[in-house]
Every structure is written in C-alpha cells, then in structure tokens.
Length: 290
Ligand code: SAH
View 1 (tube, rainbow, N blue to C red):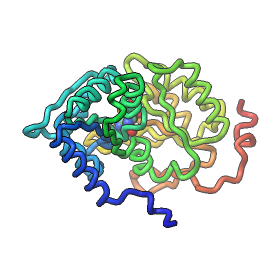
View 2 (view 1 turned 135 degrees about the horizontal axis):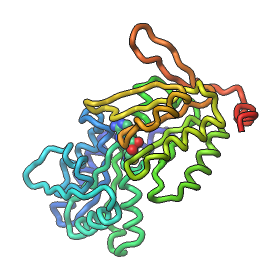
View 3 (view 1 turned 45 degrees about the vertical axis):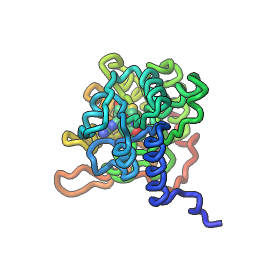
View 4 (view 1 turned 90 degrees about the horizontal axis):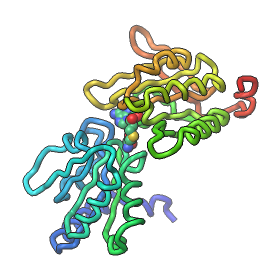
C-alpha cells in the first residue's frame, strides 16, 4: 500500500471545508480548533486560514483574535487566557446550536493549548456534543519556529515540557526534567516564566547544570515570527544568569550533550545544531555530574 495514501490531500481539505460550509447552511454546526502559528500570517497554513474563513464565530484569547481581520457575518468572542475550559464549553454549545465555530490558539492548538481543553469539555459535557463534527487544524508550534531560526537543534531526540505549574504540581515538572536531563534529550521549555511564576526557569536551569556542561548551548527565542523577534544563543552558565530576562513570549531550548555551535563570520549568531547520530549512551553522559 502506498504509505502516503492515508494522508489527506489539499483537495480533501477543500472538500472538508465544503462539507463544513454545507453543514452550516443546513443548520448543523461544527467546531474547528485552529492553530494560528507563532506570529505572522505567512506561518498560518492554508487549511487553518480556510477554517477561519468558513467560521461564523471565532473564540479565543483576545490577542490571538486580534490577529484576525474583522469581517461581516463573523462574530468574535474574546476571553481571558485563564478560562480555557469555559471557553471550550462555550464553543461546543455554540456549535450544538448550529454555529460554525473556530476556536483559535497560538502556534499549534494541540501543544499546551485549546485542543485539549475542547476534548476535556467534550468528555465531561452534553453527550449530544459527541456527534458534532470536530476538526483540529495544526499550526507551527513555537519550538519548531525557534529551532528553524537557530539552525537544527532538534536534529536528535527532543522533548517539550511546560514549566507552568498552574495545571500540575512543580514536583511533577522537576521529576520530568530530571528524567529527560538524565536521558540526554534536547529540552524545549514552554511557559518558562510569568509574573506569577518568576523563579521556575532559573530553578529548571539550575537543575540542568547538575546534568549538563556549563558550555551546553541554550536558546532563548522570544516572539519568533513577530516584528519584535529576538533570538539569543547562550551557554547554560550564561542562561542561568539571564533567566530573569526571559518572559512569557520566550521559548527556551536546552541542548543535549551532543548539541554544537558553528560560528559565523561578523555579528551573526552561531548556528546551533544537534547531529542525528549519537555515539555516547545517556548514562555515560550524565555520570559524574549527578
Ligand atoms: N500552542 C502554543 C504554545 C502555548 S504555551 C504553540 O504551539 O506554540 C505558550 C508558550 O509558548 C509561551 O510561554 C512561549 O514559551 C511559547 N511561545 C508561543 N509563541 C511563541 C513565539 N512566537 N516565540 C517564542 N515562544 C513562543
């Protein structure tokens, strides 16, 4: 069997949007969870754009909705960032009433974002919602955008951890960090810091210094794909000192023991990459540092 045969083609996506439009016309609603990508419109997929265009109602955190131009016949429902479950329930209710709803998230909607909140609300909600057509449209997540700017830091095995302890205890965060540090993964840290959580990033980087060399490359990628984008390539030792300069729009990537820099001439920041091949076992790598 052709391995690509199960993939949806662009034509299928068009057909899907047609179906959604027909259902809206027929009075039966739909819900699409859409990823807007990390920043500017050129990183929005055509499928995500089509889902936004087809929606009668857009639901999401205010600043994400602000990225979408107003249009006649489309209602925006902005909400606070902390009320994801209410927002998801609202979206499902509107879809059940026959509206064509798009719930928007930054980056990819499945990565620390609204798609999981929608399925949580679906699982706990009105059983009638189970027959609603629900689609998730992927977007470029922050770690991929940041990695692309830096070179190829995710060329080997990597993982993503949210440092937010709003939805899980800090002990869970540190236990997971410890495990992936020992296993020598490249680690992407989402939600590294906020006004309510000022110390977690420094604590995470301190933990990293117990398993990784002080010279390990660390990337602070801020507002990637937006006009105020800023990329800093640091060592782990420098990152520890600079932890307080990260903010909520920053994605932090900690290199593995094999992650390297390639210097570039002039002012250009070095390339960061992680070779695809691994020669040392993780236990050999972290031994003696714990
Ligand atoms: N769904 C989003 C992530 C939501 S969690 C995605 O897939 O990207 C929010 C965190 O994502 C932020 O605290 C930050 O760590 C990261 N982030 C989101 N957009 C970013 C951007 N443009 N540049 C750098 N980091 C970003």
